[in-house]
Image (cartoon, rainbow, N blue to C red; front, side, top):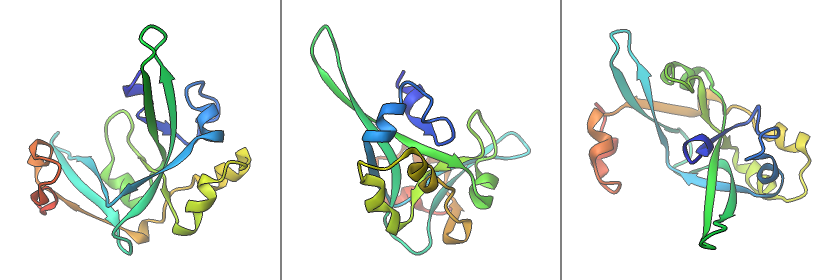
Length: 161
């Protein structure tokens, strides 16, 4: 279940039982400095890219959250999902393979952040926010393939390949 709810597609989020309540009532912001995607090369290899915004060091990704109570142990587990939209020109070129190609996280415009968290939004209001972020405001560069093996705080993760 965890793998299936890591991302939530903006186009189907209102119809999925695991997401439809959260999208209306439990929206959240996930702060980020960037994210990673692989480009599938013609020779079958993959090149990882670091994707970020040109004009903001930190930006907001739209998400949803929920909690689940284990009926046997009463343990409460808090979960969240990143909302994805269709890719723009830049991210579509990079994220060109795999089962979820042509997708990217929902990056919120700074003036949308407060509105995103507002409880009373209608389905149409939410849909109007869930749009692809403009490619002209984004940048990306290839990084070394060993980035996944490094510790999260290692600054060399973002070294260009």
